[in-house]
Length: 399
View 1 (tube, helix red, strand yellow):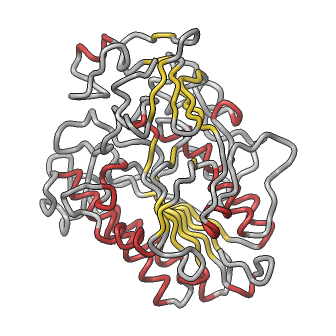
View 2 (cartoon, one colour):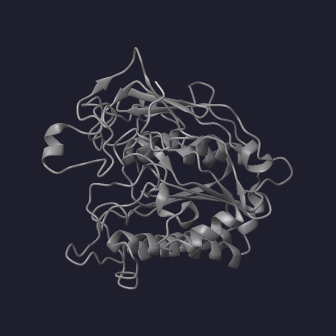
C-alpha cells in the first residue's frame, strides 16, 4: 500500500501483497538455516525489515488465519475449539464452516477504499470476500511431485498484472501450502535440497516469493506495494525427517504453545518506505497485519469490538517500539503470556501419552522434564517463567 499525501487513493495504483504459509522460524537462511534454500527471502530481508519476535495467534492454521483476517484472538472471533485444548481445531466447535458473519474481515474493510481482494492457495476459513481459491489438486504421494505451487504463483502474478493494468488497488493473500503434509514440490525442485522433500518445497516457495517481488518491479509498482511474509504456525515436527521443518532454537513445533509452535519468521518489504537491512525488536503478531493494513489504507480499525492487533507503522517507518503482551492460546485456554523478554507458562502440554506412545511426538529430541508434559499440567499458582533472551529454547525455568 502506498500513502499519497496523507491517504491512499485509487489513482496511485496501490497494492498490498501478503504472503503466508506454514514454515518454521529456522527454515530461513537469514535465521541461520545452513541449507541455503531461501536466497530470495534472505534478499527480501536485506532489502526490508526483519522481525525476529513475531507470533501467530494460535499454533494451528485455521484459528491463526481467522485471527489475521479479523485482527482478533480466536477466543474473541469464535474460531476455536474447546476440545482438549485444541489438539485438532480444523473444524472448530464454536464455528463450523467458516468465520462468523458477525466478524468484520480485512478484505471487507479494504473494499471501502476500492480494493479488490483475492486469496490464492490454502483456504480454511472463508470464501466470502475473495475472488476464488484452489481446492482440488493432485499430489503424487509416492514421489511428492505436484505443480500446485506453480499454479498458485501464476494465479498471483496474473492477478497483480490485471489490477495494475486497471490501476486498481489490490490486496493479495498468497497462501501456498507445499510445506504442509503431504509435502510436495514441482519436478524442477524435487531432489534439489539438502533436507529432502520439505527442503525442496521451501526452495520452490522461496523462488515463488522472489518471482512475485521481481514482478512488482517489472510492473513499476514495487514502491507502491507493501509486502509482508510470515507463517500461520510453527513448522510441524511430526512428519518425519524428510518432511519436517525447523523452528531454529525454539522448543517443539506446530500445535504447541512453546516458542517453536507460535514464533514465526516475518519480513516486511516496501522499497523506498521501509529502510533496507533493518531488524526490529518489536514484538508482533499476525493480528497486527489487520490493523496495519487498515492504517496504510487510510482506514481505522472497528471501534465496536476489541481489536487485538496493533498498528506496526511506528516500527516499520520509525523503528520505534511499542510495549505489548503476547497471549498463547490453545483452544480457549490461555496457556502462556509473554511480557517483555519474559514468558510465563500457566499450563504446559505437548500431546497425550496415547499419541506419544503411538509415535506422534510434537517435540522430537527436545523433551524437557516438567515442561513438555504429556498430561495437561496447571501452573496457575506458580507459573513456569523463562527468560527468552538467555533461554529461547525454554529449557531452564527461572522459577
